[in-house]
Length: 243
Image: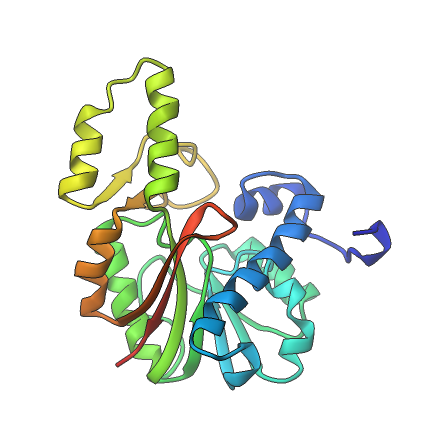
């Protein structure tokens, strides 16, 4: 990728909020990688982005993914929402093929019932506790049309056990948290890199045992596919359908 092909990008602090690093090259390249990962998930349903007339990126940040979707945005209605007003401000000014909105930490979103054919994201439910997740799963159920699709990411076995290995190398006893991961199935860690960060106090680090996803998320949506490390070879991707 040459510099000439990279458009104006958000400033360093906005890139860090979305990508976890300030590096402009990774911000740009990973956005296209995420588009490709979501496209792969949609191909499981034998569809592509342009088969959905109205799509929402839920938790879009400053547009890391949507920056790469100009051609798609010329064929379908694209929307993006996020809790970060500064990121949405930048995206609104620089990604004109998308309609953006700021949302609160809890529902509702400012969209009608059954408004979207497709909702997608990367790394939103990886930062919310169980109560917040259930609230948002219910809200996504409200705004997605019957038969509509969702592509959502979670931090499953690979991110969780990678973190446990790091902790053990630092002489941290991980026995209790690993047992909770196996039995409860969802772990919310508040003592993380997001303390005193740019996001609200509810925003931290969440890990999902896949068994929990199949047991609990199936109450909200039909699970069509679960792909370990399907999102940037790190988080797991789910293909869901509204009944």
